[in-house]
Each structure stands twice: as C-alpha cells, then as structure tokens.
Length: 286
Length: 265
Image (cartoon, rainbow over all chains, first blue to last red; front, side, top):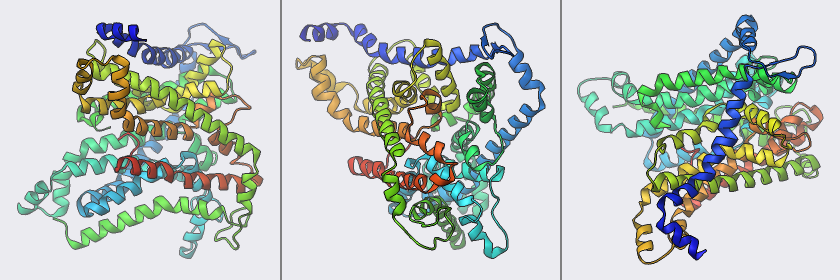
C-alpha cells in the first residue's frame, strides 16, 4: 500500500491512467460499443420464414421505412406531438417563470423553486398514471367539465399531449427562470423609461435575451416527448408514435434490425436539433 | 415596469400552474382511500382497505426490493466511476479531456429506448444472463454523469491547493484523498448519488430491455398491472406511496445543503 502510494505520487501519468481506465472502459465498452453494434444491426435483416437475423449488409429496412406511408405518418405525428408539447409548455412556463423571477419576493421565490422541483422527484410513471385516472371515463376531468355541459377528451392524442406537457413542464420552467433571473432589472427599467410598455419591453428586450434559455428548455421537452412510448400507451388509446414502432418491433416482432433502423429517426432528429441550436449558446444553458 | 393588473395576472397563472401540477398527485392520493374499485369521482366513501391489501401484495413487495437493489447497485457504480472520471478531468490535462463530458452525457441525452435496445442487443450477443446484474449495468450508463457533474463542479471550485499542501506535508496519495479531498467532496457525492438513485428507481424504458421475465422493478410492476382492472386499487396505492416518498429526497437535500437539488440544472 505504502509503496504503491509512493510510486503513484511520483508518476503523474500512471495516476491519470489509473483514474481514467475504468470509466473510459465502461463508457466505450458498455455504451459506445453497444450503440455501435445497434447502428450496424440496422443494416442487417431477418429471414422472412425463420425470423433469424441475417448478417448481410442491406438497406432494406430503411427502404421499408421510407416507402411505406404508415411510417411517414407516424414520424410526422411524433414530430407534431413533440412540437405541440414544446409550444404548450413554453406558453405555460413563460408567465410562471416570469412571476418567479421578477415579481415574487426572494422568500416566495425560494419556495416556488422547491414547489416546481418537488414533482420532478415523483415517479414519471406515477404521473402518467395520475393522468390516466384523471382522464378516465367519469374521472376528475369529466367531473370538472360537467357543469359546462362538456366532457374530457378521453384517451387519445390530445390526452397524450396534455400528459407529456404536464410531465416536462418543470424542464421548461427551470431554464426560463434561470434565464430571467440573469436579466438585470435595470434593463427593464431603462426600457420603461424610454417609454416602452410592458409588452414592448418583453418583445424587444426580454425575449431576445431569453432565447438561449428557451431553446435549452425546448431541447428537454422536445427530446423527451420524441423518445416517449410509455405515456402514449397509458393515455394514448390506440395512437402510435415513433418510439412505439421501435418498441413493438423488439417485443412482439422480435425484429431487432428493423427496430434499430427505426431508432435512426429520433437519433437523427435530435442530433439535427442540437446542431441547429448550437450557435444560440443554448447548450451551455443545460 | 409591470402594471398592477399584469402582476395579478402573472400571479394568477402561477397559482393555476401550481394547482395543475399538484392536482393529479392529490387525486391519486385521494383515490388510494376511495372505496370504489373503479375510482368513481367524487369518492362516496373512504377506506384504508386498499392500503392493507397493497401491503400484503407479494408482487409489489418483491418489485420494491428489486428496485432498491438495482438503485443501490447503479448508484455504487456511478459513485466510483463518476468520481474517478471527475478527478481525471479536473486535476489533469490530457488529450481528449473536453470530450469526456459529452461522452458521459450521451446515455442521458439520447432517447431511453435507443440505450435500451442497444444494451439488449449487446447483452444477447455477449451471451449475458438477463437479470438484476444487467439492469444495474443498464442503469449505471446514465447514472454516472449525475455523480460526475456534481463531483466535477465541486473539484473545480475547490482547486488543487489543499491537496498540494497535504502532499507537501508528507501525506501520500491515499491519505490525501481520505483526509482532505473526500471530506470536501462528500456533500457533492451525496447529491449526485441521490440523483442517481432517484433516476434509477424511476427508470422504466432501459429496464424493460435489460430485465428478465421473472425480475421486475417497481415501475415495471406498475406498468404490468396498470391495465388490469382488478389490480387497479393496489396499483393506485403503490403510486400514492411513491408520491409520498418523493418528498423524502427533497427534504434530505434541503437539510443537508440548504438549497434545492435539481435534476442537474
């Protein structure tokens, strides 16, 4: 022990290698290796009769995904759902974050941050389940809407969007709150002194400064919605999203190559998203 | 500056928002005492029957044990690997240092289903036996970054001067770590470990693809029983218990650090 300690003390590089070896081995072998193998598997195919994987490079999985209109529809639907969830969350989170950062007293602000953070610790599945109970026939939503002579949306795409927006709302509120807190009050006062009303100040001063935070929040809401297949199973009725295609091909289809090919879609969309927003400086806000 | 009307409107949205955030959770809690098997709303009569029934549910109990074991295992791996990687990045200069953060972030940035099928495929190719061990491996891929981020931020803030002083005074590598670095790092490791455990405890997607038929974590158990009408009250009680339990880490973090611990931002 003593000798090893003395030796490590003298050899900085050995110390570094000892520290690095395990984590790097872990990430490269357990994660990157698996990811790479999956991406290669996308170019394999399965035997039509036996279902066994054939290790022969082909583009047939991708051809099926592009040529069959059902997959284009599912892809568009997934993008639409992710975009709508992002818009809904932005519209709700903006006034909440603005109140927390610029109106509430410092003491109230601390409490509000805790109030927003606490539900993040509650299980994702439990929250999706809570909305299943709320949206069920004769559930709380129906009961609340009854006096207005209408009823809830029931299970379906609308319910999916509502539930996803609920699940990811804190991921939008927190970056926006952090972004707003960084904007000095003096800037807003200066804008008011120059004669701008609140709406004009918001549009011309706050929004441009807040844009990176807004993008950071939408990375979360968008990617989390795009990768989801559990929520849509719980409250989506018979609706299908992109991740369901991946999931079903593994569990019921047993077709790993096709599922891997379908997994290219969320990966490419998210990489494209991240590359597109890199210049806004949003990645430093995460 | 904002008019009084605007301030009130913002306060109203804030209140309404919080109401929407907490309403579904309150409904689940209330329904766990709802005597109606189908959760007729509003509840006509309250009962504790479902709680005692859930307490006796062997499926839920063994799922809870699996979840705790998987969470502890993944947290342990994350603590060791995350701390080592953080040290390597914070205390040494080397080629490729900048890409470590990105690499470690990948498993959490890509959709869970991608990680899930990648690992499923890899385990099958490697001929591994699916079970608790594969779940732990799966969970630790995305848990490492939580410990790493917390430890790295703390190490950067501390700087290396105290460690150098310790070594100058004749302490060896281990002694310095044990008596100087570790005590300063402890609360950051605790926060990271807490996040890692919470994330593992909650995870369902990667778990789906890395578990064996007989090995169920609590989220898998809930999901498996969600669509069975006669299990509904027991599932609801488990959900309610998890909501109550989720206050625990917030309270712990508040007590230990005096500031809220967030999901890493």
